[in-house]
Image (tube, rainbow, N blue to C red):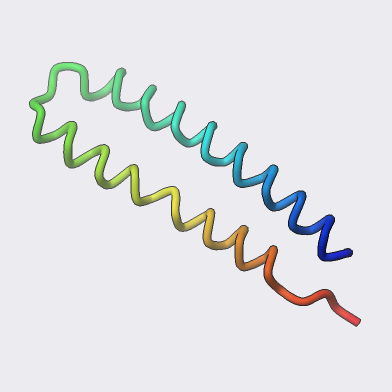
Length: 69
C-alpha cells in the first residue's frame, strides 16, 4: 500500500476512533455514573481520557511502518 494512502486511511481511522470513543465514554458515564460523586466522575474521565491512546498508538504505528517490498 502506498505511504500516502496508508497515512490518509490512518488519519480517517483516528478521527472516527476519537469521535466514537468520546460519544461512547460520555454515554457510559451518563447512564452508569449519573448519581455518583464528583470524584468518581473525575476518576472515570481521567481513565477513559487516557485509554483511547492505546488504539490510537496502534493505528499510528501501522501508519509509520515501511511498505513491504
